Image (cartoon, rainbow, N blue to C red; front, side):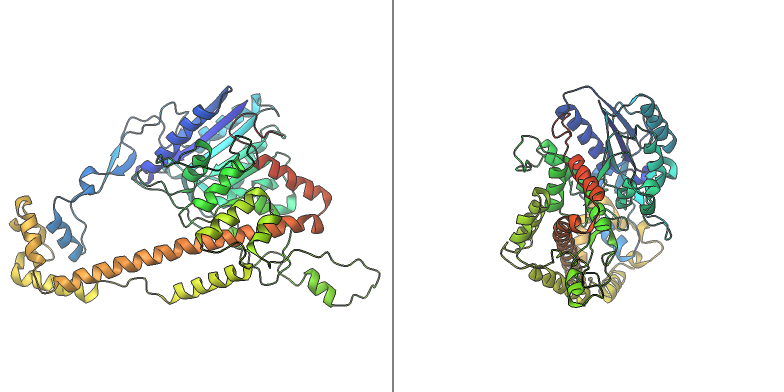
Length: 510
């Protein structure tokens, strides 16, 4: 039997955005549509079934201003408009097991531990907020729960320890800093303590040290990891946009790994997703390239960055001539097509799709990708972020004060009868005729263009990082049998096999 546990919502009304609720509803319907066998789905959302308004949405009036002159003056005076832009309503998630509360979630897993067997499976989905781990324990990140409570990765790992030791656990997490939960494959999150006996894999929207995209008071925009991930399984994203060609092996079912491939390649956000097998490879395999940088998990250079490559070993004569030569490891060189050919379907699809997005050809050399990424980084650091309105704002406000002194009064401008609703459009038109308006408007447009350009550079940089990470993953997987013990290689195969399972009960099960 499959058990689903969904953790959704924010830690407070002000951080409980409608997009989080929409994600829960989307996943709930997906499970009902795709799961043909008996299952149990426990949903812990925000404040539970509390009848009060707790979901943050965009206020209807905020979509188009009915007080344009007042809004402009508010921005010139650097004041918030009285017109409220956000509103709150009752949540629409039905059949909730309870609030997003650590105690309730722990008790739920303890009950499951008493009845579950090795033939069962636990699938955990988190669409919430998260926080980074402390400086001395960076991978111990957390899930924010209602009323400012939290669940740390280490705490969550100990809860899972109570389940049958051979019961598979699959996690899909989209909260900020969720990559820390990828360490749940190690006992107590500690690599030195070895693996957990329980098979666990996960797919994470973001690294352990970076915030994730997606929490919004509106639901029209669904550019976030889990909408892409579950969209690949459903055949359409949360917004209804069609998703096709995700079944890479042609077995008629989109596996978790195949959904991950689509999400990494198509996700148009700043996220740098990762999966359990990536974390495993970066711990137990190594790259044969001193220049290769590990872009996964925000760890900087690869853990095995010291001079241990096969090429360097060969170039230095060893004292023992009879000692075996160091293995010839795959290097970060060659065409993109050579990496696609060497990698599995998942990494190959990620490389080919991201290369296309970034306008590379598969016969381009990997060095071209790395060079373009470095150029992008250097160019971005030299560009302006858009500056401030500065004198343009002050000059326009001075013009307004000269024509309408009461509107220039910093303390009492909102009391002016000129701001009556009936006067708004005419007043705005008169403001636009003032000498300072053109400079102010031009500055606004320039700032908007610079911000948009900066956002596009940031998105492009994220795609570069994903591509380079996927290339490294292919080499790490190739090198693993050459540098790791057989039992480690076997564990990696087990992880990949579990990642290749699917939401459909028996498809891809091993």
